[in-house]
Image (cartoon, rainbow, N blue to C red; front, side, top):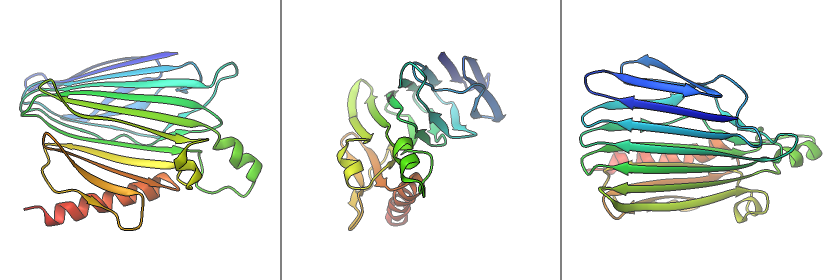
Length: 242
């Protein structure tokens, strides 16, 4: 199944949207939308494309009402999601969906491509976990549930200049899995000139990027643990910001 979602935020006409396939869009408040699952997706072979445009001066917040669970189909295990995001001058966008959970041996690929005007503002959150449960007593079921992989890419351009080109892989056979990390949480912010910081004991850091942006990323045994690490780094940085 192919799912396509288009969301456009405007100053004078509110939010326009269109969706076909396994996702729907609900406007829950002015400038606030939620993605809602209308069918089981992504299964093996499924493709999801989400296009978001924030016109100059408009504000938009995008979330989701439930986690996205990637599962294999009978004849194939791979699925994909692509987000294409544009934010115009003076536009403000916050994207913070519920986690993506890759389970049952699924292989899921995610790519986010962002184009920003120099006067735009973006807070972009992403949370991923391999396997549905943090702990399982049945090791056979746990191994089967956690046999999947996730590959995520994030590319951000500001006025045509590359601010970030980042790629991460989680799951079976990865160095992260060997270290006991099945989940990741990240936050990209623009503009943001706060200094970076590296966690003293955990796999977590907040990096100051060239071009006036930041990327906070954390690995953990579960998505709640990774998210907590990322949130702590963000809160610490906010506390000392001038």
